[in-house]
Amino acid sequence: MEGNLRWALVTAIAPLTWGASYLVTRQFLPADDALWGAVIRALPAGLLLLAITRTLPTGAWWWRAPLLGTLNIGAFFVLVYVAAQLLPSSIASMLMAFSPAVMLLLAWPLLAERPRVLSVAGAALGFLGVCAMLLTGAQRTDPWGVLASVTAMVMSSLGFVLSKRWAGEVGPLPLASWQLVSGGLVVLPVALVLEGAPPRLDATQLGAFAFLSLVATALAYWAWFSGLAHLDAGAVGLIGLLNPVTGVLLGTLVAAERLSVLQAGGMALVLVGIVLGQPQAARWFRGRSAAPALIPDSLPPMIDTTPPVEIRVPAR
Image (cartoon, rainbow, N blue to C red; front, side, top):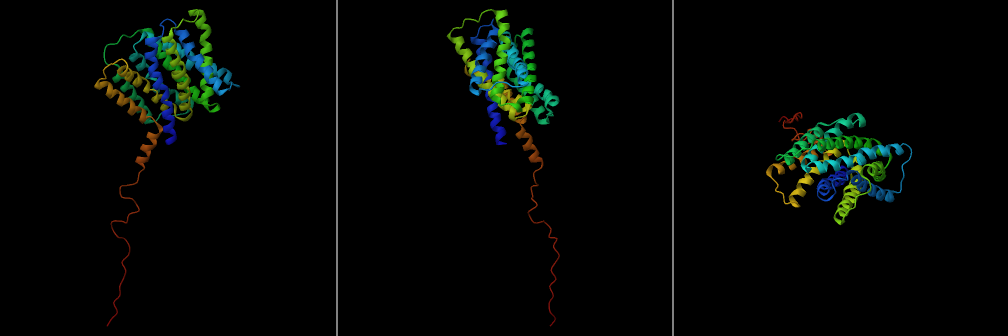
């Protein structure tokens, strides 16, 4: 149990930093360079991790890495970048909150991980909590932004489940580095053709990209793939719900937004859902159902069933 808890905490690094990426992208990055934004975020992070791991793909990984890199990194970053520019952060985060349920469904046929009742309940509670946190008023919803966000969610869910299916062959660090490099290289020629030369960035934008690339990408994806290597796909997906929680908290702390009672209740629901979906919760409930009675067997019975001892008194 302690090992699972440790890996759950490591995995949480990813959604905590991803939750900040919507605010950083929307506030500090250019709106018209989604393709270059994906390249600048992914490629430096992947090259850094590749320099650390010093391991190149072999065998089937020469086609698996580009496939996963496209699903999880290249196309995903582009779509998330577009969604962040077209949608309020609350709507984009809410749509991504479907990811745990999609990962649960995909893990059944691809990983033979049957959805546990507690995992399904946790996903439902988590989604309700996200809705309570974010759907607090009228929000502008651009249909193209919704399409981009939903497509990104489905693609990444499939990519993460496939990553777990093949993760036993490589460690989390090379797995993250290969996907980031290949994902960045997939988008690079498309960015050159459609957007031309790389955008000129000022100091603020360079700092924003540095955070996205080093923290919310290199560190985050190593943590995420470490979680996929040690935990159920559904459990990892539920931990991802910390993403919108982080976004709401940042809005409260950074933008001085007021945290309502409904939002606080939504956060509580999300946290309960995450805990319910972890393997430790299932083991705890099984242990409770198999617990001994309140009066343990080691205590003597209430009625003495030992035969009486016959005492004979000698005749006088």
